[in-house]
Image (cartoon, rainbow, N blue to C red):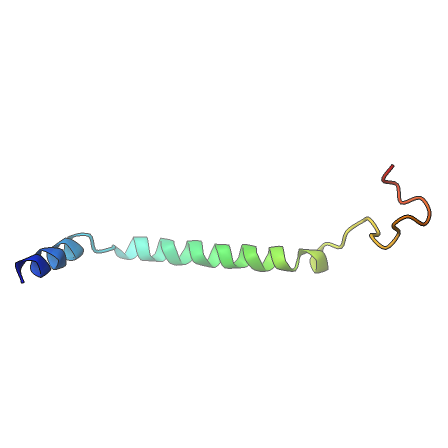
Amino acid sequence: MNVLLQHFMLLVRFRESELQIYLQYGIVILLLIAAVVWLFRKKLFPSRYNSNNCGDGDCGCH
């Protein structure tokens, strides 16, 4: 029982402050926004090169 009390006291001592919680939420939100932009980047910024022209004609890659 004494060991459980020591672990509880250790957890209470390292409790997160409000600022740390807000910073963690901010980081998570920024990462989610970056992930959504990364997923839809082909829709938002289409590629300049046509990948359908492979072998028939000059694709400009040689």
